[in-house]
Amino acid sequence: MTDTPFTPGPWEVETDEWEDHLGYTHTERTIVTAHDHPQLKHPAPIITLRKGLPEKEHDPLYAYIGIDPNDARLIAKAPELLQALEDFISRECSQSRCVWFNEKLDRCYKTCWTLKYKRLIADAKGETIE
Image (cartoon, rainbow, N blue to C red; front, side, top):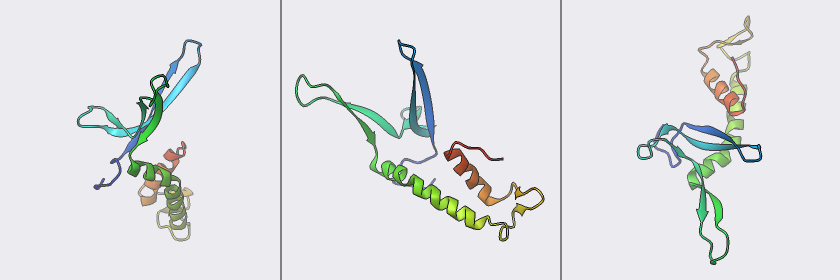
């Protein structure tokens, strides 16, 4: 990826599950880089939970989410980016215009350049395509 203001991708979701003493299962999902950070030697978190000291002595600690402003803007725009990509592919993949569509198979050839984007969209939605 080129030099960007946000954390370079790819990113992925790590899932961790554990049971508490009452038998309830808890699931924690963390967005991290898909590659090891050179100093941390493991994937770097994109969003972190931070704890702060209270202003007054007997007040409880407080917790807040920490995220780089550039990463926050990218995540906030993800739904619009996804919709724009879906609209673009929909226009490009109309059967009357697309040279990669195989009418006998009723699907695109594997060499279709939009197939990569269709798979990314499906993955983002938790779906799969062949």
